[in-house]
Length: 312
Image (cartoon, rainbow, N blue to C red; front, side, top):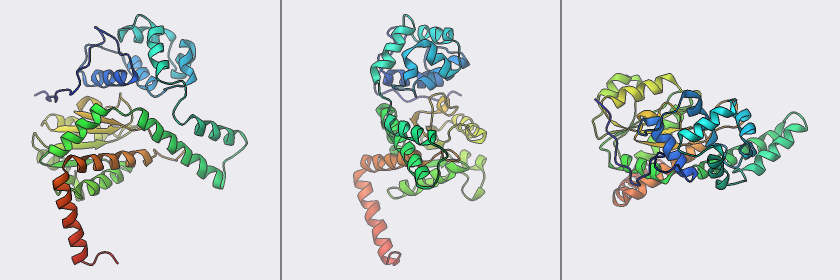
């Protein structure tokens, strides 16, 4: 049984008719390629290259096919074929779309400042603190520049209208999943962690119905178990919202909506700062989508907090 896809709220021409004319259209095409919804077929190298190119907004590497190929560790011929497969006359036309987006990468100032600090010697104390904070600021800038309103609205619509929502993430992303459960439970009661208290992944997935939503979160290097859960859930089928980092993430193929979140910093693991911000954005948007229900739920929560004397 195939997983039905919800209708797109904004129709997008296929690149066979007209190639993408903006980064937003390129990102949309990349998502459709990853889901098998496009007639464009890319090999593994070209697929990975396109995903990385979409993260290089304003990067000087985009100024020439040679420097871009070096930055991506591919041959220039790979980029030429990629451009033509996407419907452009050649790399130059593809490059023009990339350059038109912006010549200054989001958060470039912070990156430059961090590079200067590193050049002067080993980071210590306050210097390391400032650099990590600035890198997270740059990630938030990139999150905004990558924002896909169609995908975000689709995610909010799916979550808001679902009879029940389950959320799954492991290791670091267990913290993300728990936070998202807490936030969504402020406005509705039927939100749960998948495999809560180790009750079983199979049992949890089996309990989901067609109209329910499963939110999955992972970023590179992607957790095999999360990808396997996505595959199993898609066969039910249930609606899947992916919160991940790149358009070639293994979660994209099974998703009905995807929210892309940058995370690269010098933190010793994957940074969750921007992922938590993305969760806050989702929670607020879902609250706004159900204003009357939200008011009632929050009022009841406040009443119980007062009756139980939870707060001083």
